[in-house]
Image (cartoon, rainbow, N blue to C red; front, side, top):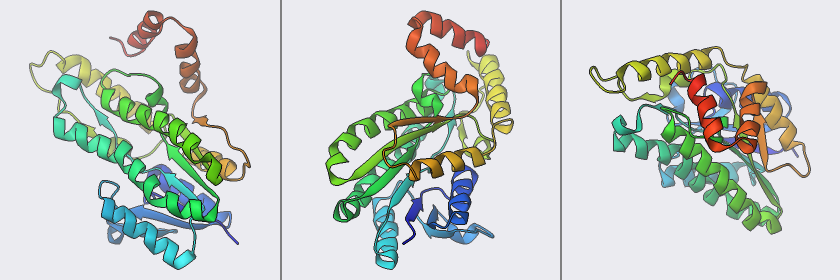
Length: 267
């Protein structure tokens, strides 16, 4: 029987690319969107799901189990970007980011684990970010929400391994998607101490996304993980220098690494 895949945030960007690729490979694929009725010409089945709402999560997963009798793979892909000087990001936006990028995936894992335990098998893939391996200027909230999910994965995979369940992280670098248009940007405040430097960083971040890699690279990587009997804990997908930056952080003294980042971001 074909494996049943659930991808949160499957209506655009990386999630859409993954869903369409896996569908072509013969998997039964369900994607999610907060408003599926607004998504045109989706090749994969889309169900309503808001990862910030526990009942929405439970309803979505119950619908799939009722129809398919199982869920083999959960891909926690739904997420949002956020930028700004920490001092100037509204607290409600910080909470919304953690609700989406961290607490949402946690709730989704909690909702799907009973079914996977019953099956005595399952795979959960948490899509994090290379930015989650380091604190980046003006991306403090995004880096920390994704970094927290990396550590949650390390913990929960040990708790669930005896049930035949694998849980892994996949950290993408910059990919050419519409995330820049959907992320929350703290406004550039005229006269702020951060006005000029933040505007420069905002331009650079948007440029990096628009010049990013093809999302199909993520789809290929996810497919390989699904086909791997004993997957690794951490995967990184992206440009060589983005992945190498993690290695540098591991081996260089903290202040030297900080200086490299500050030079890169012209701070």
